[in-house]
Length: 92
Image (tube, rainbow, N blue to C red):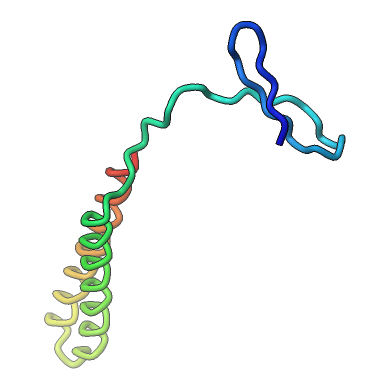
């Protein structure tokens, strides 16, 4: 990909080298402000999501007792939701 720099230090990248779609697109010179998900946070999110999936399976296997099945289902939704919310929050 070819890069062009203008006198005011604005960088532009070409969309393709083939000549088709050869428009110049501005490239942000600022570093990304999105925080990367750390390894420990990723492991915690994966563990919470996995535990939620175990609770989904438990809810399905306890279908004879509706109250217990609902309890497992609610815990599963909370665990999977917490994993997703934390991962999304850390990526903003």
